[in-house]
Image (cartoon, rainbow, N blue to C red):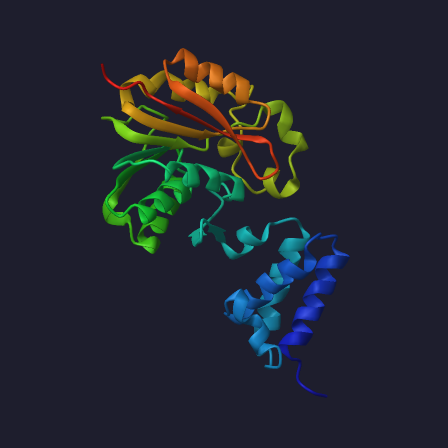
Length: 281
């Protein structure tokens, strides 16, 4: 009997995931098989005729976790974000493509200093510093576990010399002013938590998803400190839930910000609120 090849392993992985009700079975199978083989996903096709070696034994527990609802990024502890791979773990949100809007829009303007409130994995801050080599930034989070992940990501991307990470409950440990303030805060209302997809509800840290109330507490806290920490003419960009645009714009208007606008995601849903501090007279 001939030894199984990578192509056979991939076929079995697709079958297992399809039978387990996984929607993107073929794509997820390629990610997991490549990881089991120690290959980049885009190199897998070149090895279809190779023997599997010990990859089958490594693959089985990964398939079981995926069928049980664990996202591929959680299994591999990696997620692509803004063209780079980021480390993820149980202490941080799994970065989503829609969060890249904050990075894209931040890069439209100039900044030399950036503050990331609730930095999590650090994916926003690290991406911004990687794209702007002269900028420096600070990421704050209430979770020491999240900060440890953020520091690893900063080192992996090579921006650790320009990034500072500190434990802070929003503004509590923040000093000084910044040209740019960004945040993807917990914005899911407690009443909405049961309706989240199981991949999110069961694997993202709840403290990073919801404030345990109406989903707006983080924006209230952010708005309250902007007058002290956003430099004159500086910009703030925050991710929101698709029904929160009007409420967050009202909070920022009450905080004295100008040029307030709501930016959509690729599906046309409200996704980011952008605003500026008035220029000094």
